[in-house]
Amino acid sequence: MEMVPSTMTEMWTTMGSTIASFMFIWAIIRQYFPYELRRYFEKYTHTIMTYFSPYIKISIHEFTGDRLKRSEAYVAVEGYLSVNSSKTAKRLKAEMGKDSNNLVLSMDEYEKVTDEFRGAKVWWVASKVVSATRPMAYYPEQEKRFYRLTFHKRYREMITGAYLEHVVKEGKEIKVRNRQRKLYTNSPGYKWPSYKQTMWSHIVFEHPATFGTMALEPDKKKEIIEDLVTFSESKEFYARIGKAWKRGYLLYGPPGTGKSTMIAAMANLLNYDVYDLELTAVKDNTELRKLLIETTSKSIIVIEDIDCSLDLTGQRKKKGGKAMADDEKERKEVKEESGNSKVTLSGLLNFIDGLWSACGGERLIVFTTNYVEKLDPALIRRGRMDKHIELSYCGFEGFKVLAKNYLNLETHPLFDAIDGLMKEVKITPADVAENLMPKSPLDDAEKCLWSLIQALEEAKEEAEAEAAAAKKVVEQSQDGGGVCSENCLAEKASE
Ligand SMILES: Nc1ncnc2c1ncn2[C@@H]1O[C@H](COP(=O)(O)OP(=O)(O)OP(=O)(O)O)[C@@H](O)[C@H]1O
Ligand SMILES: [Mg+2]
Image (cartoon, rainbow, N blue to C red):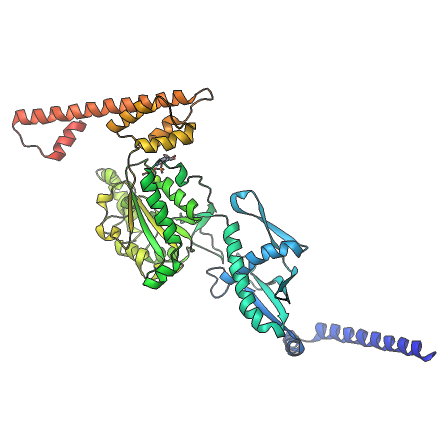
């Protein structure tokens, strides 16, 4: 009976000293063995351990290949774990979420969480490796982040199949729900040399415009909304008919009729990002293609005032260049500018519907212009710009939307007078909006409506004066017996 405890004690002593000797030897190996030998040793112990271990590990890295884009799988897992880990993990990190009013939690580095799927237990770890060498001194230290999934080998089929499918699907949905939409620009000046260099810089997209707040005839509004929603739900349809999943919109009309506002409303309706492409800042066709490749799906690519950024011949010119062309000095400037940026019309056409335009999918391309008739027909033919939307002067229906938005008025005795005036003169929604805006805390709805009536009357008088002047010119030219073309009449009238 006495023997048992003494054996136990002996056993513990032996084990203790074995561990101590092992630690000692390991310390010596670490200190004196060359690095290469040590790596071999580690590698083989690792292989042996894996051979005997019943667990399988899957790593999902943040960047793969040439680091152009974050891996979609990583982003999906991040989304999935953001919800599932916040319940169990003890160390979390927080980032600003949608609309900047809530924080989205995700697992912090080296944190481990457990998940269960159809009775199988799995473990997720967020980890990273920091590469010791830096390619260049000004490059930041390279961190390679990844998630590692561990599970028992008897669940191999289920985990690699159904579970991962479930993770990716749910993760994507969570990402879309929490996504902060972004407004990207390719303006120069932000291109720092960095290993993560992208050609776009972004800020959070926070434009409040919606179709509800847009002054537009109800039928037209409905048609546009239905067109957009149908597009966003037609993934299978586009695949079936063999067309890239994208759609082009051309918005045209006078300044201040809501073209830019409509783009924001589109982005808000479909929950898309916006890429505002400044064509004059693009060096050449190659750069244009690079920009295109870096755009993500669920986005709107916008080129504003397309007529100003690209001439019909494919030669570039400065915004508003036409008006300046008379001035010798400025003409030279325009020439110089076009000299170092060589995006051609064919380059742009390629951008819209070339082979590269299909990557990414689910994208809208929107052009805006004030002068649709100036554009090359090739640029706006159906298939490139599938839907042409004319935004025009404000009608009474449009006014009612604005009155509801700005003044919270559905009806008012002054509405009839406004309706009458609107039939006679053209006024842009921007001008109506400006007049309906209270200018001081004491301004009430009636005062704003009067201010609009006054503006309409002034516009009417102006139009009448112009018409009278034009008539006079015609009469004069007839008296003089000279033949005057339409252009020369217009010129004289403007004098
Ligand atoms: N249809 C509209 N509905 C509601 N508000 C409008 C509408 N059109 C214009 N506005 C108002 O007028 C302002 C100018 O409109 P916006 O910038 O969209 O015009 P635009 O057509 O893009 O003009 P430009 O051709 O000069 O770029 C906006 O701030 C918006 O509030
Ligand atoms: Mg605009």
